[in-house]
Amino acid sequence: MARGPLAFQLWISVCLLLFFRARCFYLPGVAPQDFQNGDPLNPKVNKVTSTKTQLPYSYYSLPYCRPEHIVDSAENLGEVLRGDRIENSPYEFKMREPQMCNVVCHVTLNAKTAKEFKEKIDDEYRVNMILDNLPLVVPVPRPDQENSFVYQHGFHVGLRGQYAGNKDEKHFINNHLTFTVKYHKDPMTESARIVGFEVKPFSVKHEYEGEWSKKTRLTTCDPHAKRTVTSSESPQEVEDKKEIIFTYDVEFQESDVKWASRWDTYLLMADDQIHWFSIVNSLMIVLFLSGMVAMIMLRTLYRDISKYNQLETQEEAQEETGWKLVHGDVFRPPSNSDLLCVYVGTGVQFFGMILVTMLFAVLGFLSPKPRWVDDCHAPPLGLYGSLCWVLFSPSL
Image 1 (cartoon, rainbow, N blue to C red):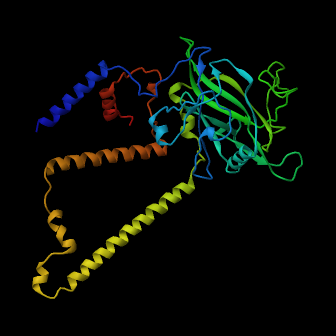
Image 2: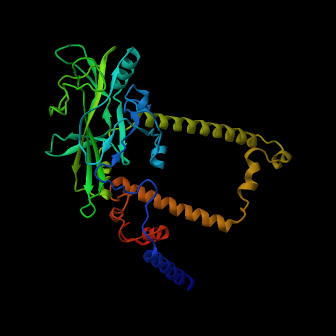
């Protein structure tokens, strides 16, 4: 009877030792990165997705601007499981150094590339990007509240509508991007951490004088003349033999949001990218397969029961056929039954814990990580210390 309290005291002692001796650590891919002024930032492009269709596409499947060498990269396991296609981009950022009207490339569309853009615009595809493992979002002002925004994942490839009094609907592409990188500065070291990545897309028909070259200055977006793109008054149409110039701006804003709280915006945002077609398709497949298996089982059982009811002699009744042959295996006790009970009981406990934790996370009562992870301060837990904290912390 004394073994229980003694084991509990021993477990508490081990946890306390690990609590004071272990050092803080981060899982690979989730550690914060400190950036100094002028440090290069590497924005990456992701897949192109839509809520109208369940088919995602790679970013470079469309005739966008390409870097010299395309390199695939995966930030973490979750992105791989979601089917993300993360690749490097031709955009170049430097920490806390604003940029204006940077020209990425000059593209002349043909019939094939124009058709590809039009199809993606009709299906409302969005371009996804990431910076420092943060997805790109588009802030949309809320009409019911001032100075309040709703965030959407990724920006639209383009839009479809009427322009200049033309009755026919045209396709316009978002070829100018205004990026906003939010950072939280450490007053002690002057280093900064990225806490937000936003964009405002515009469709602009850029104009220039003379023939196009890499050193050509735009008249619609010129940093020397302090002329920036603030609206889509003259949008860029998508048609055959149309010239498209892709440009971007970069702004940096200091934020009071700490690195540990930078995911709050994504956790509370209303994600409209719900693939209803894929969900209904999966449910229909599951119901169809379940019905097929149930029908096969019922037909087999009905045939065996009919045979049992048609037995004529006692000798035939003694012969076991069909489902009666498995009664010996069903009622035979398994080997190592005690160990099986332990495994089953532990599995049920883990399954219940995971189910309850996910339920609280869905309802919004549980944050995915504690706040003290930001500065890696107390409690300085190691691997086993973190396990003890999870088991005995009252906050969970």
